[in-house]
Image 1 (cartoon, helix red, strand yellow):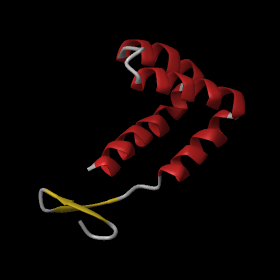
Image 2: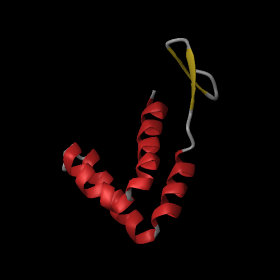
Image 3: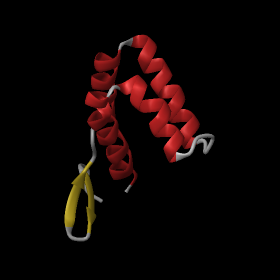
Length: 82
């Protein structure tokens, strides 16, 4: 592993700035919706919500226009975990 990332399948994967994504989600949602979103995401990661339930709860809080930010966050968490 280099200082800036990891090599996977011959490709250099750089770490993603999760704080920057979190700030963008917070700016898009506002404090109250952000708190609800984190609670929903926490329950999902604790296996208390299924994927269908995650979608049913999170999309109304996020708004369809912010789903790409959520997807970016999830992909980035997995990328950083490599």
